[in-house]
Length: 540
Ligand code: C2O
Ligand code: CU
Ligand code: CU
Image 1 (cartoon, rainbow, N blue to C red):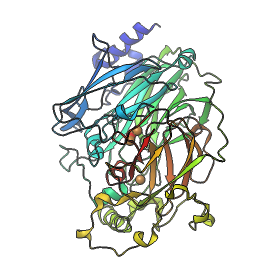
Image 2 (image 1 turned 180 degrees about the vertical axis):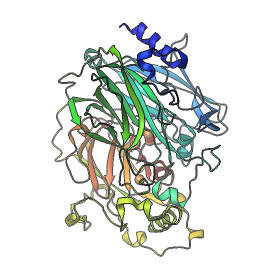
Image 3 (image 1 turned 45 degrees about the vertical axis):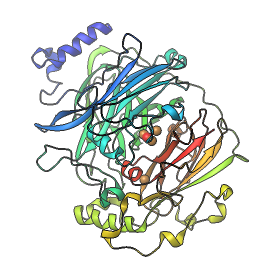
Image 4 (image 1 turned 90 degrees about the vertical axis):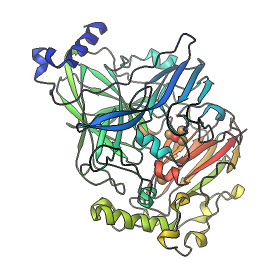
């Protein structure tokens, strides 16, 4: 069957009365269809426009105010070509300032859209850049300091599909919305009456992040999607503010990971399930040739606060319904050549120590227990240090920490200082890196461009998951929480897990970022980021 016929057929499927007999039993009339973000078209001048705007969405039969780009919720996907310049007009029709950051793109600080790149209400900002990095699934979202969590929770996020020659030659599935399907996963908490997004940034959220019990895929709870039979490509984005996910097929059919945050892997990696951090992307291929219906689910995780129902058992995210049409993409044996890692001896190294004020940690945990009870601690009974890492190695090994450039102010005296009464403690700067909450005006350090460096990000000292992200680079993970990276995490990445232990990444910045438009390195648990766990750095 040809593409056009397929499109007609899926359009027909969308109109409930028109379902062919053989599929009527498959498509549950009550289950919503998966919305597929449209591909943004350039205007007559070849420019793109993204307008951040207010709107509304319907969940559980109720209208809820939401925000989106060029629409009510989320945004269109931008399909970009490597080495081809792109101009985007970013218009702000929101009642407050915003910024638009290109997460995963290696572009200069001046167009990166970090917290300095404010767009006032009513204003437009134009950016032009030329991506020059391997094909990847990236995304865009707001980055207004102190407000990123709120604005993302309102619905602002969209995908960037970067293509290159190598990716075009592989016969991966690439019919958008048919056998190449984006899945943006987000959880939300609605108000008790279900008519508003109940976003809060309080001491509880500053400690464990904002999370909710309404799980959405492309903005809809548990939708269904009809696909051709054969190889199905899923572009997975964990767009949650704080919640880590653990993706699997309901019948445990294997997932073949072909790409990570910043590009395709050397070869497909077969996994049974796939942990997915907030901010992280993976591309997976799934074999649907048996024609059987299955769900993509998220399995329970042990992250603090994220163990409550309905996340205490496999939770369906989207139902996949293979049609009697053959898909044309394939699963190649090999994908792209990843450059060998250089020797790390002698490289400039930096230490980023993630820290949470003890007051925030204690009071946040108390608030979590008070609100949700023990259940919220899930598998994490006995909150304290380092769950799941190697305890024998736990004593802070200061000797092993590189002390060059004095980037390691482990001021234990200050960390363990007197705790203040709750009403005096300001959690807005309760999360820190190297002892400092985010400082918009002063980058923490400067990095020479074009030089590989080894960065160690340590979360020793708390039991929180910190999904860590660095702007301006696609890096390689050298070690993750004390272990070599899993094979599907060994390619291009811009996110690394820091979970009660430390992780090492090999970074390199190919573009300039001035102090005024510094790049950011931060925890992508957005409430940690918004309350200080972020640093700016320049590249020259
Ligand atoms: Cu996805 Cu600095 O952000
Ligand atoms: Cu980013
Ligand atoms: Cu964090």
